[in-house]
Structures are given as structure tokens and as C-alpha cells.
Image (cartoon, rainbow, N blue to C red; front, top):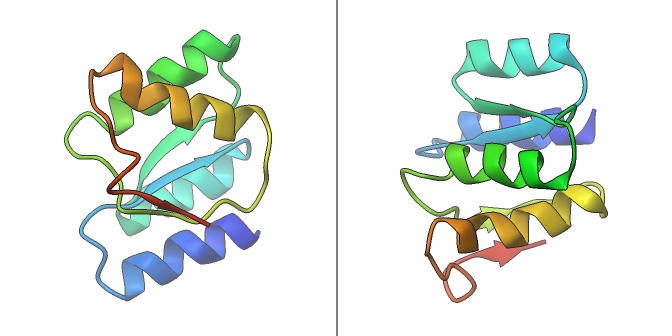
Length: 95
């Protein structure tokens, strides 16, 4: 729920692009309908999740990442930009 609220808040405040990652297909569908790019966390294995996140971030690197849960998704997020050949550490705030 807190991730959905963060994504909706970012969209409401005019974020150019919002990437929402989650497990609930209904919640992801609502966020997609509101304008977010969504990534399902039901990927098979960490490599698949890294690739799904890299694909979602292929247009531009995020400037702010509000992380409501720490764990495999966070690890995949930090690895994902590297698979695209980008170094986003200097431009991304992770909170």
C-alpha cells in the first residue's frame, strides 16, 4: 500500500516518469492506468527481475527511488542500471 501511495503522489506532483514495482497485479494495473510504468516482482529469479527493471529504466535513469521494502528488489535495482551500461549512482537518491 505505501508503494502505491508513493507512486500516486509522484504522479500527482507531476513526476515525468514513475516506475512502480510490486506483486499485486490489481494494484499494478491501477498504477499503470494512472500513468506509471509497472514491473511485476513475480519474475523468475534475480536475473529476470534485474532485466525487467533495466527495461523499465531504459529511457532514463530515476532521480529518486522511494523504497518501501528492502531486499531482493533493491539489490536488483542497483544491478539493473549496470546491465544498461549506465552509472546512475551520482544522479539517483535512494530513500
